[in-house]
Structures are given as C-alpha cells and as structure tokens.
Image 1: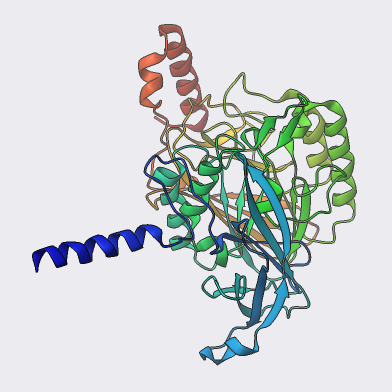
Image 2: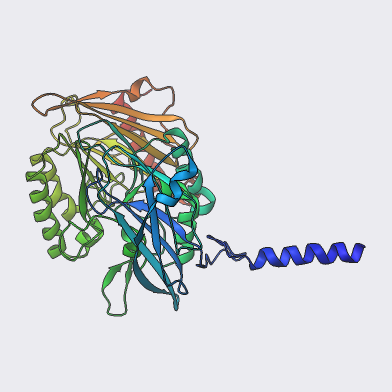
Length: 466
C-alpha cells in the first residue's frame, strides 16, 4: 500500500512537470519558455481608443492557427458562442536561437464607452476571458498610472509596485511606462519577469510605453537598435516619424493628447533628434485637445548635476514652452524630482512651461542632486504616479510602494488655456525622503558627501525646511 501511494504521488508530480504552462519560471531564473498556451497577453492601441483595442500575445512555434474572440461583455456566460473570431497577425521572432510566435489583433468597429470580453488562442487552447472598456468618443475625465524605470529585480521587487498601483486605482484607463522596463534589451527572462509582474493586469488595462536606453542594443552591423521583443510584443500606434514606428507616436484619449518620444534615438544622432522635433511640432500644431502630455525616457532637467542631456534639452524645452505642453513624464535618473524651469524665488503659481517629473518605480536607486528646478524630491524610494485629467484640471499624486501619498499638486486650466499650479505637497504628513541610498553612504568619498550635504542644506533653505 505504501509503495502504491508513493508511486501515485510520483506519477502526479511527473504529470505536473509535463503540463504546459502559460508562464514557466525555471529554477535558474533564466527562462520563461513559450508553449502552445497563449501567454504575455497585453493590451495596447493601434488606432482610435474609442472604437478599437489591440492585443498581443505569444506561443511556441508549433501553433498554426492564432485567433482572438470578442463579444460585448454580458453578466451571463451565454455570450461565448456568439463571440466574433478574428485571425491574428503572426510575427515569428528568433530569440536565443529559438523561434517563438508573437501575435497581434486589432479589434475595430467597436462601440465607444462599452465593455467587451475577449480571449486569445488557437481555437483549442485558449486564454481565460478578459474584460476591457473602450474610451468615450467625447472629452471626459480619465485616469492613468505612470511608472518610471522598473529595470532590475522586476519579478522580486517591481511586481509590488505595479500590483500596488492597480490595487489603488483598478479603474485606470491605461498604464504608462517611461522607458527602461528591463535591464538588457534582448533578455527573454527579464521580459518574462516583466510580464509575470504585471500578470493578468496587462490583459485588462492597456499599456503605453516609451523605450529607454536599456531597451536598445548594438547589433552585428554596429548600429543601435530597439529590442527584438519591442515591436512583436507591444501594440502601439504607428503614426510617428518614419523609422521610429511604435517607439515615437501619439494618441488622443477623451480630450487629452499623449505624445511619446524616443529620446534614446534622439541622443544617438542629431538627425533623429531633428526628425522627432519636426514631427513633434506638427503633432502639437494640429492638437484639438485641451491637454498635452509628453512622455519620454531621458529627462529635460535631470535630478543630478552631470546627468543632463544638453542637446535634448536645448532642442525640446523651447518647443514645450512654445506649444504649451502641460506636463512631461520621464525616467532614467532613478530618483524622484518634480518641478518647473523657473528662476529660484519667482512665484511658481503661473507656470510659463510644463511641469517636469522624473520618477523611478524599480529598486535600482541613484543618489539625488536636489537641483534648483525641483519642488519635491525623493531618494531611495520606489514610487508610482496616478494622474487624473478632466477638462479643467489635471490632478497629480505620487505614491510610495507602501501606498503612502508622497507628492500632490493640481493644474487648473482656465478658458484661455492658462494653467495655475496649486501646490498640495506642503500639506502632506510625509516628509521628503532625501537620505542617500546605503551603498552611496558607504562608497562616497569625503568630498562627495560634503557636496551632497551642501546641496541638501541649500535645498532645505530654498524651501524653508528646518
């Protein structure tokens, strides 16, 4: 009897090991092998979000019939037989010497402000049913979450950020990533960690991303190129400059225009910088929306001296002012800074340019420089930001990974389109977190510590902090 029991459990254990899984995490933390079951399911946009919704997923190379099913959502399960079947665009991709298949379907001719149910598969092996809701075709309030760099220890430590953000605002219209989603551009296991961290949230809430420097690699032709994963696994608009498809683009959503720029390409060469600047001007000139929100990886104003991107700033900052950009969301510096490019001592209630934000959501933390443009800062802190926009107000809130409100302000827009900044951070209970990360406290030389402490005292004096 004992022998039979051992044999039974051994058989069950062997069967479990042989079962295909949508996301298999190996013991050496290096592989998330594709299987016949769809995984890495993620929503995005290819067109008008009021009448379309795109989805991407992947399988192994054995699948020959990839499809998606969609129906208006219904409380009854009886909707399933009536779902429309749509054949997917297949994108074979060779990674680590193996071919995997990525798929994309763009659901079109949808109804605005309507909830839909969908699933993906091959007609036999299916994903679960997911829900999404299309945008309104009129200006209406919207909310989204913005993440700075995830980059490192994604499964272990970034997962708590994206899941905490969703718990805080489950009705977010979409998620924005300001580059450096992973550390090594073509590392499949890092992308596997990123998708595992977001899990089913990615299948329910659309993702919009700008590439960072860590999404780029030097190919065999000695040219820098975006990750081999990027275009197959994300569904993003293709309305940007030629050659920068799905890395520079814009989208209109319920009265706001979101413009995503590829700052990594811009830092590679002047030609790409000028190309994006020209395209940006065209996009903002033809903008019928009340709000303009810009997203890119490299900051216009960095959080530390010596990390400035001078050519990028010199080209784009005057354009942001000229065309009345409201807010610029950035990453790259692995600290938090929020402020305006205005002289120290001048009233900041009437910004003459955009609000600039630099943030970090992952565990990789740098030392902070406490620059003069910054009105609120954080060191050694994982954060996410929730932004709500209606016709007359943009409300910004930054939360720590613990869920504590760390920063807040409102931008009120009058009938003429002029903004008034309402500073809310001074009333927050949480003090600014400005301590150096432990590794810098140990590695900094005496002169470096002295310089930091001087900047710290200057910053506190400017803000009237005792």
